[in-house]
Image (cartoon, rainbow, N blue to C red; front, side):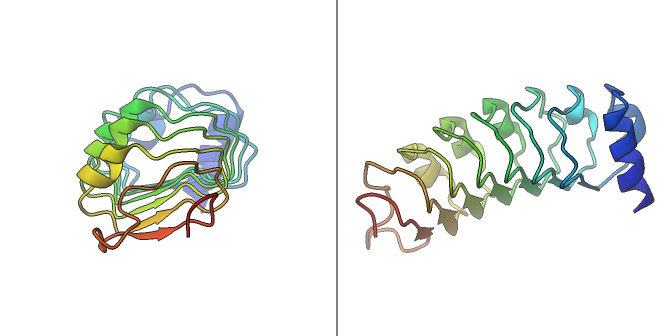
Amino acid sequence: MALRLWALQTLRNGNPSLSQSYSLAQVLILDNNVLTSLPSDLGACMRLEKLSIAHNGLTSLPSSWAGLAKLKSLDLSHNALPALPAALASCTALELLDVAANQLQELPAELAALCRLNTLNASSNAISAVPPAVLRECTALQTLLLNGNPITQEVEGSGARDQRVRIGCACRGQT
């Protein structure tokens, strides 16, 4: 609890550096804090395994994610993100990615590099298609949630030929 409060005070006071303060942190939860941006050196938190920044006002993300090679869980849900940085693909240990309830119009094809990703929640966005490479290359993917998106093309893998992925999709043209 103390680290969470200190982290919040540090970010709210405009300290642009997380690396000095949180280089040893494994879990950082900053939900419900009205944050609109994150420090550019987020990737310097090399031991981070869980990062939750849900229910804030984020409109962009830093482009540097390369140092987050141990990150397993990332919750960016309920923000105002119009796009995800392609650099998220460098988080190769990522197993859970929650980007629900943002303003995403697409998922970056680079997410296909996340071979350990087993849950992707992209519900309640403005996504009209899923890059085929994401389903083809994310071999550990078991759950893909797309409810509340204007999907206009068939989601590859939603048929009987790929039963490894449970797709939640109450979208246009999908069942």
